[in-house]
Length: 361
Image (cartoon, rainbow, N blue to C red):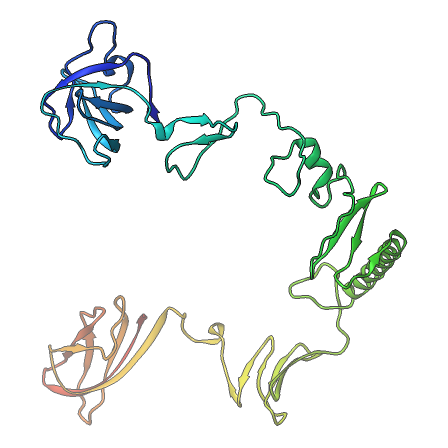
């Protein structure tokens, strides 16, 4: 916002084309710093008695205060360039003509200059006379606009305009008359209240029938994960996929068939079969599922030498080392750990051994 105040005038000495360094006000005048805050935008005129310049400046408060030439709107040379002042200059706060609204000799209200956007703010009310020429550029008062122009669809306070013709091309036109809204359909057919009521009743009946059908179907249609209806399926459920199918059999088995009708996969509570191959459960295994067995044959092992497991364990396993050669060597595994053991042969020597190790994976 550009600032304006009464009786603001100061002098400046030899400013050249730069900022106006302010000397202070003469008697009975006030300074810019007294009238405006530092950093404010102020209107200014600068006049040395033979030439003048006007525009908007930025005030810097201080000792001394100064005004920077932010925007120059004109000067006595007919340009918008900064004038070079070489002597004493009076700098005062005044509005350039381009910002002053006025009434011309014909009573028209105008703003001078080349301002492209004007905001007119009325603090109370602006009273506009009735329109006398609807083909001209007269302002329309509220009571005439209220009776002439179409209101928003659905506004119960809307009045039906007289002699109104609207061409939509497509879409829907609503007219308020007789205390109710009436609708013209896009095809041009007029929707009377009786017809609208018929359609509404038909829609209500259709909705009721659909709800009843939905309720009946709800007890007959299997829904994923829904056991709230205690639903039962007679026979068995089959899911088709391509040329094959997957069936949940009455005996509790689930069987998958290929495109030729051959069963290739089945699941029951006791077995799983895939293309003739059976599977065992972890409960059927001789070991806990956390353990494993390593069996290996190692040849030419010398007594007191280290033997490494072909597959290591996470902790020390149980180990058995047995002579596998034709000799009658007596041997055993000692000092076992997760990675291997030491072979001890009674009487020393070398032999082939078979190793069994059982322990944690």
